[in-house]
Amino acid sequence: MSRVVVTGSTGAVGRETCVGLAEAGHEVIGLDRRSSTAPAPGVELRTVDLAVTDLREQLADVDVVVHLAAGVTAGDQGTDVGRDRLAVVERLLAAASDAGVTHLVVRSSAMVYGAWPDNPVPLTEDAPVRPCPDFAFAVHRARMEELAAVWAAESDDRSLTVLRTAVTVAEERPGGLATVVGAAASIRSDEGEPLGQFLHSDDLASAAVCAVQTRYDGPLNVAPDGWIGVEVMAELGGPGPRLRLPGPVAALVTRVLWKTGLSPAPPGVFPYSVHPWVVANDRLRDLGWEPTHSNEEAYVAGHEPGLLDRMDARARQQVSLAAAGVLVLGLGWLVVRLIRRPRGSGPGTYDATDGR
Image (tube, rainbow, N blue to C red; front, side, top):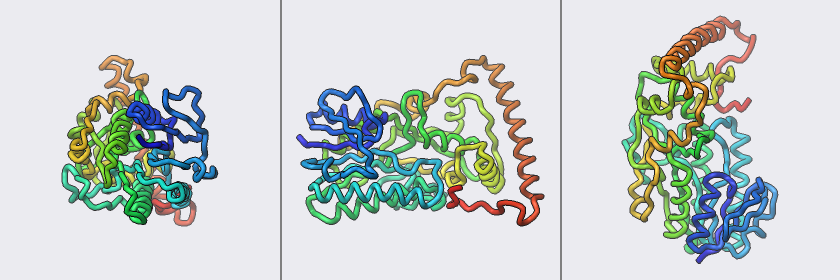
């Protein structure tokens, strides 16, 4: 069996990946900035900052690296953050080269396919990588794939598995990407109906283990079977203000909510709430992987119960209608203020690459 290093080993996915690899007989070393006092049997945990630690020493005699550590998050904006995170990836790849690592597994995202009107439903791994250019998260993941592909191409002995995942959630913890996508979907454009795929963290961990076991070389979509529509998502997610607006107005509202701090969803994610980007999992299934959670089960598992969930149906409806009314009035006031603002008195057009 192999000696495997897992980065991001204290996260929900990293923990289960370490456990699964150890149970499969691998010697597992987990690297993370956060310390953990309860390693699983057969797992050695090290507190390591990938940005400053000597990674060559950490990868000594290692055969496989599973890179799960977080890079740019869904709410990040600006190129500086992306460059910093990619510098960490470059350090890891350089150390892997020096240490003689022969197999790399990288966690990417299905968002690298982009959300475009002409996307097939579902997308396969043969689809081109063309992330929406204003969404830093997707652009970063695509660039990380490129760097990893260059590393793999430098030697015939190297193989690379890229895991292109659906929106991933853990128990009662939706995660940053799920929160951002959910916030974006609350402002619905009449240009399209969003489709959703939600992957449980345990299923992503088992996909990473499968990639190591099979030493698969190439991209793998990781998602449950099928997908769910916006009405199902709304029903599962419980009450909340939701607006359906003409496309340009919906885009404007999204920008206003982001600029005023009322939404965690940056404007660049808006196309992902309009156009399809759901993926097929046939290739991964052919390797023997099976999801243990459906889209609906994963969505509910990642939904942390709140005050509205504890109300009866009548009370929830009243609160939801009131909130929607307040939101509409507030948005109208904000739009009017922005339109009437004299030129030169404040920020003008929004630049999606502005990280302020």
